[in-house]
Image (cartoon, rainbow, N blue to C red; front, side, top):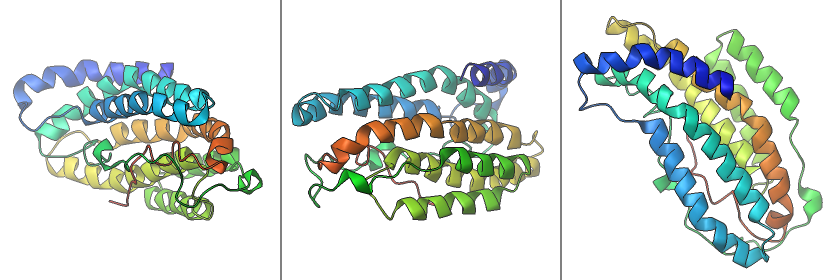
Length: 240
């Protein structure tokens, strides 16, 4: 995360001055807004889950909030980097992320009731990351999106588990599909290609899979007991 902050800051140094001529009316810090909304939601729901789980959910909420706090340090630089593109009419980052207002309403119990924890399986994160990074390095964005989609379909076989990993894979899928779209638009407007920005944010999401799997593993016993923590705390992210 530290290296991502350094990279984004370096580019923000050049991006921020551009705002003076690019104009501000079409510019939004969409990624910062997304992380802030997620942080607010998880802080609000933390005591609700703790009351329902006799405090057992605290570790899950704390891990979610900690991950979002770490991200909140870096994302303003990404938004600054994106601003000149947005001012030129390219909705980079804003189109890539789904509003937290799409998050499911809070429910105290999974409508399907409890489940056996034996049905939880931790995904092969090392293998998934390896393949995603291989396609990332090859700039095979459509294949990357399709591979992420395949993993999502596999995880959907047990929808109450691995919800954070699934959420990140949905985000990776969407960003990968949009990367060449934004790049083509930026070139059409005679701007430096936006591909490097998209790639930086895309790679950072791939690297979030480890933390996400850890969150899912801690959440699994609670989810097996019927508490829909994490799964109802993230919005569905569709293909663009």
